[in-house]
Length: 331
Image (cartoon, rainbow, N blue to C red; front, side):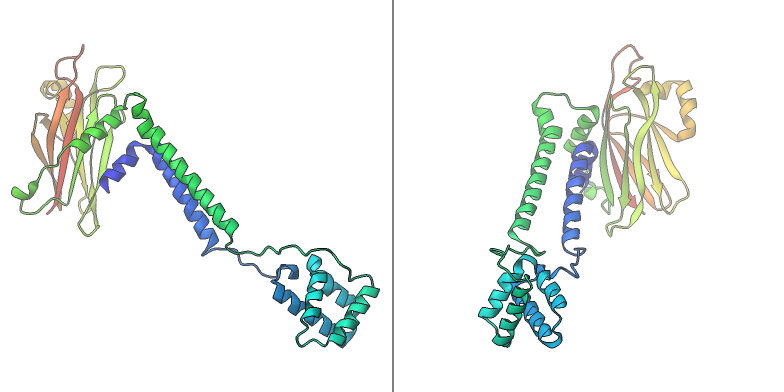
């Protein structure tokens, strides 16, 4: 699940396309099946052929009883273009209807100018799942698949094949995915309930990675993350000289924070004074570990890799990149 979430986080355009496609499909399915429109009080000319004959039979029988030519005319005309052919079908297969009554009805309606041939009756259209509906669904699904494929190509494969450079966030995500997480089975009595890798690359000025901490049963335990704490110098991109690593415990009243500092910031009294209120300060060194602890959680932060930028600023004063592993245990 984590790689999928990271993939969508780094590619919001693809996430938007897939969300739209899934929403559209669910909307169509819900509208067609559980919340489909129920047809009531349809015009009688929308009835099936056998039901139209039944209706015509009742019209003839009613005319026999009340002799109301106006009412019989209305009922006959209600069948619209199907009226004449329906009556002819009834004459050919009268069933329980007396043929004499049919002859009388036909004579009366003909004399009144109501009954006359109308040509071939049209094919009725009734609601339901038809070949046309199936083809429509097929076209919608095909269109969505094409759109998803095009979006995936444009926002991932197409960008890379065209030689366009990856963003700093994309580079960082690739680096995080390539890191092999620490196997704690040999050094810890229980495996961590959560284990994450996060990477910062120079140019990702909005770097602020956060993760949910959940138990094996899916219970929410808290959150953790890493963000930019302090920069040095001016201009773009930002030159990050310190990061904040934090952990929130739902059973605790405060968020625990540690500050990871470049060698220059760690040894500079002005930076130490500025950052000491944010939490305990640590010098970033390769493979260095530090622990954050709350009432019910423990988190081990490991510096997997780091590299400092080169330029006009003091040596080892800002990060070109840094990769951290966060491993969390429940006490």
